[in-house]
Image: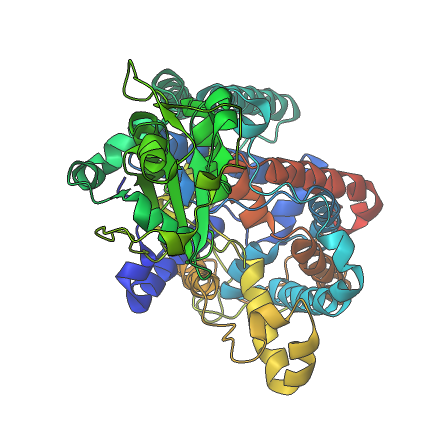
Length: 406
Length: 186
């Protein structure tokens, strides 16, 4: 997926130029909306001018539809887009205070910059007030830090919460917003405060385009792990084929005894096999695509010493898990070569071999379910002198792009 | 007392003649497209209050560096060697200033003026503008974002916090409206 761009690759001067240009567009539109004028903004709350409501919600639904359309056709990777974290109570209280201040002052931080740029003296006074508010907050927040960091739900979106596809929510919000615009329109007609720049025909066409795009998002649907894999397969499939990511049991043993590295072992066999035998530190995950996908968020952004190794009895399920994790941006992931069967072949002294019917079946039997208490679960590295070609190379984590209203 | 309108958009001895604002829905689409391009290209949306925070943190660290280093909130902006101005949101704010000026010039709207309701004096307006600004600055940092970031950007990204922010924001303004009627109405 080509977007968002890797800003660290672009370098600081170019990145900052992009942000200045985006800012120019933002400031331009705010001024065109009349948002540099406090009285026009405040008039919204006395129902004398619906400009603010119209501009804000049109902007929200336009951006929402375009962003989700770009994500759904696979040109924008939403996982790399910064979404402000949801701190329930601080947001509700801060938003309320902001709303009261907005009504009293008639502006908000962005619009006061625009007002000041067009020589509006009240906007300059407002901006001075914002500085005072920021100062008071910075000096007082240490005393209520506990509250300010409370109810942190992290990156939490409506589709996450409701568990329904993005397209359904996008379409719903678009329809509700259009209905509200229609309500505003009839109210304006009744009270005689209609906008002289109204153009019903063009507005209807715009509404139609938004609905069509929202429907497109709904029909195509959210990108799946397969889509993400397709996007990286060109680069990653050769690594699988050339066996660059399948590590020898000897290398895994070395990693297990490497105090510096943070090793995460993911055992993607079913619970029965896991209970029979598993590596001591291994965490069991059901070999279903959903279960593997759901672990991906926990494996992103770990420290740069982290190595993840997937394993199944053979290599099939472990390879599928590897693909799923890699598609979901998990880095430094490897596969145990030959799987648990190869491991037991070398270290499993008390395991009895048995014939297998399919490649990912356990090829050993145990007298009892030993789980992680078997000698082979954590072999003594000094007893084995294995020859292997080391393959683990730790790649630096991709730079985090986001930063929010930092 | 009225403020004399001075600025690039007024000729000497003439009254200001600002152009009317364009269709609000059209501007909304334009703003939405800017927001979309920002998210698409940079992975970040729009914001404003963070820039004020950074400029202020920079200033504070010039005067009382030790105090900034020991404040658990400010230290992340300007503690030690941190360069608070070295951040994309500051660049964005500079752009907003330029873009606002360009648009104002095109609309013949750049001249000194105190925008206010008809019933209050300039002094009252400026006092309330400052008071409102203080509440907004405090509230924006409290909510971890202002109308641009939590409001516009977060809502377009379907963040739950942002939709709560929008409701709290409109709720706060609507509840306050009857009490401050005099400020804005005739």
